[in-house]
Image 1 (cartoon, one colour):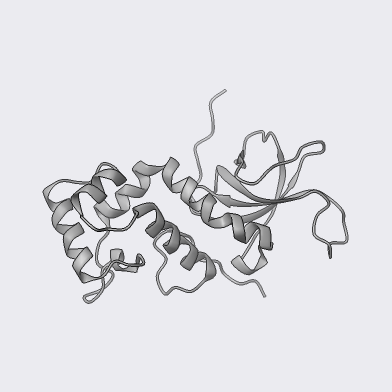
Image 2 (tube, helix red, strand yellow):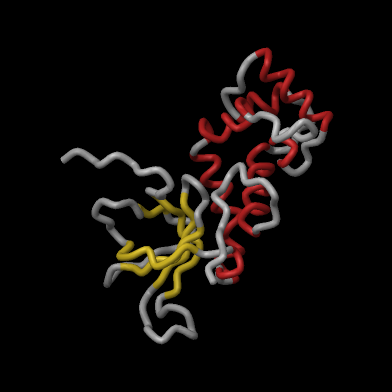
Amino acid sequence: MEAEPKREGLEEYAVVLDYLPTGKSFSAKSEPITQLIGEDKFTLLEATLKPGTSTKSGERVYIGKAEREKVSLIKSRLSFDELTEGAKKELPAAIASIIRSHEEKFINIFNIAGPLNIREHSLELLPGIGKKYLKAILDAREAKKFDSFADLTGRVPMLQDPVKLLTERVLVELRGDSRFYIMTRPYVKRY
């Protein structure tokens, strides 16, 4: 059976941030739920689980349209503030894990990032990258595109860990503290 093509904007896989075996304390219905972060656009989600299944923090689960092993239903998209405290604690490690496991995709951010306007470059949105590091990154990528995080840090001396920079940027965007969204899809508040 051929897999159906991935539809734009939908997450296929997610990393578990928190598992609540009896649901939220204020919920009228007692059912196991899990809070997740999508691997493609870092979408924060809440899902119910199939009977007899459980998850643990850091576990990768399939949430696409085909038959799912553990997830029964994606209940809703969450804002950062709707995450449990446990999920918030797990979030940085989960983001870093996603970035490391998809290094080719995320190193490409350094290879193709462009200006946002005449005064600001999108790489300057990464914490710790100012004009000096921006120039060094642009000069190095002009000579040859980066093929890994190790290549980037080797050719741009004194640059912080790129995984840490990208993780911090994702956290800023998930909190809703940004004018520009380069790593995530902005959360729109429901009224």
